[in-house]
Image 1 (cartoon, rainbow, N blue to C red):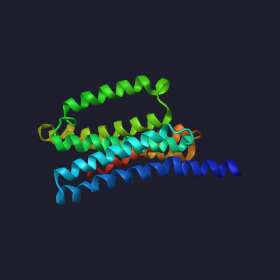
Image 2: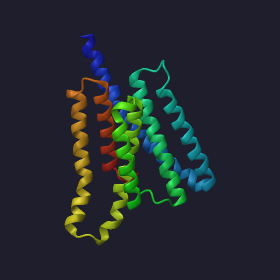
Image 3: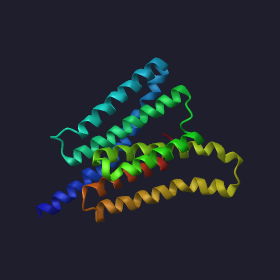
Length: 207
């Protein structure tokens, strides 16, 4: 009975809970840029970016603290990945860097290959969760920017590209089912939580 309760609590906190926290943290750190940009402008955004960088560094440091439990390390990794992504995103938008165009796709693929090669042998769970969050946020931004090219595409490709977000939503539902019914180990719950978070990003493209 105690084992069932412990496993159920882990599914909520390490799976569903982490996905919800990630999405809320993403929305909060994004929406905060509106008043900062409106009232303080570029200097305020630079300060905000450095603050996010410091938060990301702190969360990344917590991954390697000995007293930190493995579920906590996974969450600190996810939070670090999100903070670092927001740093990259806001810096690129502030400096008009081409990270979300075709060159950005090549950089994303390069990063994906490096992470894939180092995934099991070199990265602890916290680092894996950090990179998973960063890569999925980056991919969503690339997808969002892709809509600007739809004007010159045929209606068939236009529909197909738009449908990808709903396919991502369906994958998120599958990940949610895995968390509830099929997850037995922490890594499965962590990766499924990141997948649910990514599906929410694809469905809500306003961010």
